[in-house]
Amino acid sequence: MPRKKADKPRLGVGLDIGTMNLVSARQIGDETETVRMRDVFIDLPPNAKKMLKLNNTSFVDRGDELFVLGDAALAVANVFGSEPRRPLSAGLVAAGEIEALEVLGLLIKHVLGPPTKKGEHCYFSVPAPPVDDPTRDIVYHKAVFEKIVTECGYTGHSANEAMAIIYAEAAKDGFSGVAISFGSGMTNVAMSVSTIEALSFSVGRGGDWIDKGAATSVGVSQARICAIKEKGIDLLDPETREQEALSFYYKELIRNSLDQIAKRFAAQTGQFDLPDPIPLIVSGGTSMAGNFMTLFKQVFEEKKKRFPVPISEIRHASDPLNAVAKGMLVQASLEHEED
Amino acid sequence: MMKEAKITCICKTYEIKDLGLDLVSGDVVHIEAEKARTSRDLDVAKWAKGVRVEYVQRTKNVKKKVPEVVRHAFGAIPSPPPNPKPKQTSREVEMSSEVKAQTAEIQGLKAQLAEFQAILLGALKDIPGTQQVASVAPTAGTVVEETDDPSRVFVPSKLVDDTVKVKAKAKKKRTKSKGVADATSALREARKKE
Image (cartoon, rainbow over all chains, first blue to last red; front, side):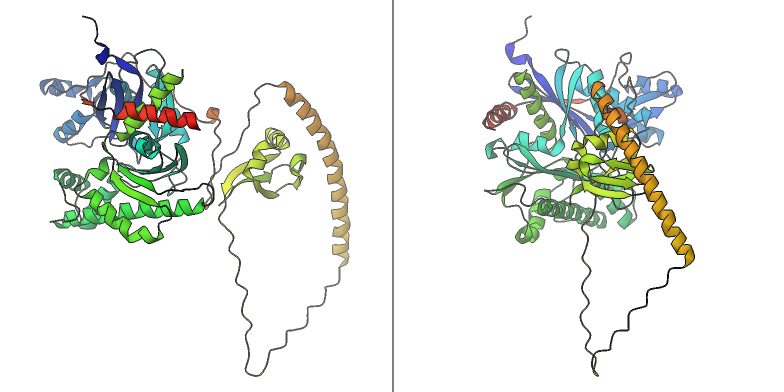
């Protein structure tokens, strides 16, 4: 049966590489297809194969060890009483972690799928250099993913994570705005003026930093805090001590991000003009917590008078979990049009 | 904060003509990063391992406050007389002539080096794709910009194993929305205007 025109995938794919999730986005007809996979794995000895088969758990057999990838790794970790491993740490891949790189290769290959045609353009996200830890570089991180994407049969292009949010969400604002991506490992910020990246940076604080801080302050495990968070929390009305701690650290993260924007903007005064106020768009998995946007607006109100960037409105991305992947897809699609 | 190139002379003496620098061993000079990148003589100097270059971002120098004049109840305390200049000893006189001799030697070496530089520049022009090597040595309190030269970053090959079939669950979701298509058209139009 011939494929309907509507089902035919258009050329170009976007890839969001995050500490917690990998997300790809592709346009198929008039639909956008996203594929999401948890960026975790667990390695098990070969004798665990029988138990995995009994549980109907998918795994990768590498002869001397088995890997369980993605969401299944979290479930299996509980059963075997071990910790799932994350190939990325605070948003970046660590040099020397060869096993982590190989797992990343498998995860990305699965999330991307085969290219529609050889050399299909794939835009993948990279963070901006972290301002709070200048020793962490993104050069190696960029090179690793460019290699992986190329080995998957694509033509890889790296692009700033927060700018992707501008491309996905700020079309009606002429692609001018401030985008903040609150991720798990880090928070990325970009300011765009009519499609041009005027400012970008990242801080090595995100959802994991919140969990760690809250866990330490109330003396419970990070896993417990994570479970409390995932069960659901109202940041404006915390009920337990753990929720109070979480709310505090969420507020601190927002405050720190806004302070950094003000600081970085002040350092570049005179380099570009902002004739009109621009929107501030918030995205990322960490921004999905209950009443996060209300809390964000409250913190912003406290800083509004001294905030150097004129803001027209603060809004949540229409699809906070997939905005980066979609923004990457926009750029990849254009790349094919220009070919 | 401005990005600068920190040039350290690691040989006996080196002249970088197009930057107007005349360095001796241990000299450290900061110049604008942009100037450093466009300097051909600096390229030669790095290649010849005469200098080491690091890209740094220094914090602003804070001017020391000028101390206020302290008014005393009984009038200003007179400042002490300046210390008399110490007489040069015979050993110091000897050292001055030693320094003079060394200076003359250095001048001679500089002239030789200038000739060597000219030969190198001529040879470099014939070599296609000569690459820069910028040393990266992060030090406390500075931000060091790494070179974008990809050959400095080793990434292992065959990170994606073609023989392995990945069996794992991924969440696939399709949403009917014009968002991406509209954004792509808008971005195309916006880029045309630039």
